[in-house]
Image (cartoon, rainbow, N blue to C red; front, top):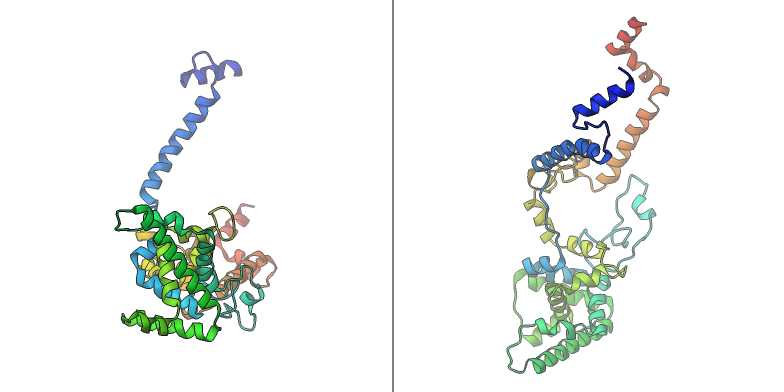
Length: 336
């Protein structure tokens, strides 16, 4: 049988009686089993699709934590989310001995927490008269809805404008004192009369409450994500702000992403994550890396040394003779 006739017979076995071959059908025959296997693997090992955390979610779920975080930003003592290079020099950042690597990287995205997260969004709301847009969403108990909205917009703009002017007219020390008093009041749940609150907190209470309202209305997410680009695709600022609060830390524990579970290699809710990162994750769970604030850089350089060692293994004396000790090497020698 000629080669050509043999090919026709083979094609006929697959249902092509005339000996022709359809490329689309052939590709479908190959990809269909792969697709079935892929769907099964995703169903067995795929992690759940977690809902993205927004500033609106945070402010609604934990308003007190949101107010506390806002006050701490105004007091100049933000959390770990926004301090250190490449954002600011509030902390020195991670280093390796005398090598201040994170600080040497410079400020790629300079951030003043108080201005970036609180003052600038409120100022933009004031400049753009944003309350005129969201005023209709307010809970207004009035028969004359139009008049009530106008009064609401006017009152909110006046309060923000007065608070911002008062904030900008004083020095950092007085701002810090105001914010510290407000932080203490929130932590103990103390209530103050308006006159006393105005003396102790200055404009901080108004600024924090207005920012909370913007966050709960879903406006603050847009103000921060569109701060560095006209497209709402840069979540750096909102992520840093959320990271300064305690709510996100508690959420990571709930989702099984706390330090004991090693989120770097594990998925949420006990689902498998990036298993190829487990050698790196293992280093974070042992001393001294588990207790070091500079663990990221230390683990990176240790893995770099190991990688370079493998690259230059044939050139390292004694170690380059190690393959001769393996049985596989001796078997190959006997075959020769």
